[in-house]
Length: 414
Image (cartoon, rainbow, N blue to C red; front, side, top):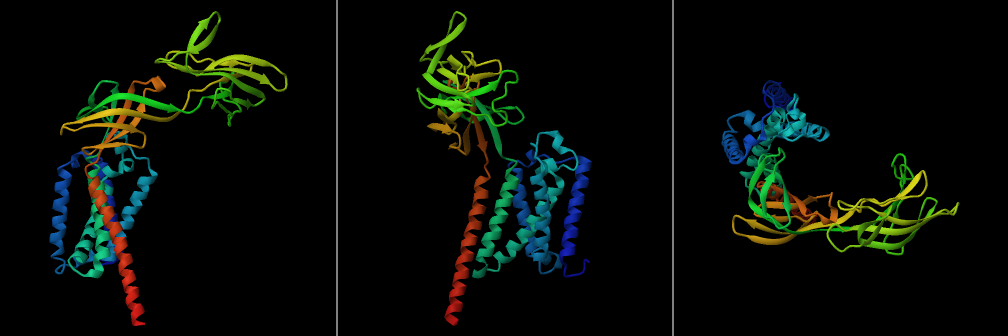
């Protein structure tokens, strides 16, 4: 071993040495904080690193070790070692960088802050970079697919890892009619943003109400383990729940509960705080037992109303499930932009490098919520990652085109 030319053994010994060095450093000082690599440190580090690789490339003819860096033995040993740690990263639950629990040795719960991962990643990028420089300066047309694929991979990986220090994921709570420019990060720190969001209206579209049977003693839905339900899609719906026939007599989507003696009835109430209420008739198919009355899911203003059928079973209406919820907002930016948009789940709005997602609302108020919760994400290195991915796609297409041309030349010769 260690006799030129080097092979796989030397490659895996180097990777093993880097891994053990990283684990030792992890045990001695703990993991490093990604925040220390935030802009402009990450950009400066990338520029210096690749300039150093470029300098080493020009000395590769003088040193066999530098020539070995662009060999497939170095590539396979480095990528397989890094892939093994990446597999561990996928199997171990990753904790946010601010949680000290993930910093405990060996630190695999915060892999991007782990010294062993950092050393192996830098080693792999060095091998990949030397390989790209070798083909890049050969200036042969046949190397175009190879250069595009490997340079794209180099750019995408570098951008993804270094850019992770600059990713911001913030949460903003907005009230109707009140512009908000403050948000909180994962630590709970309140930050002032270069943009403000004014909520004009929050809206929810709900699925039709459901009726279910519950056990009076345990509160479990029946049948236990696989509860049945009756979806009330119109005002004259008829259905079945176990041995009970259910008929909807009156459906009030906008209702208010009114006490009448020892009971509660519902009337139409077209205002804030209205709830869903159904007047139903329930009959037992075997005994003929019949019940009639109001059932409501209730809300923050009115209590829920169940129908007790017997000592064991009651009929209830669960809270309606949201089908779609969205916010009508205006976004103001420091650059002077004023943008009126509707933000909903899976349909974010992008403004000045920020992506604004609909995250939640005041669930205690349901459809009458005057609060909308947004997630704001900023990843300034994302264009770098996309550039690398597009280069890899271009490399795959170029490989296909070059292969077709080669096959065409062989066909002509034949």
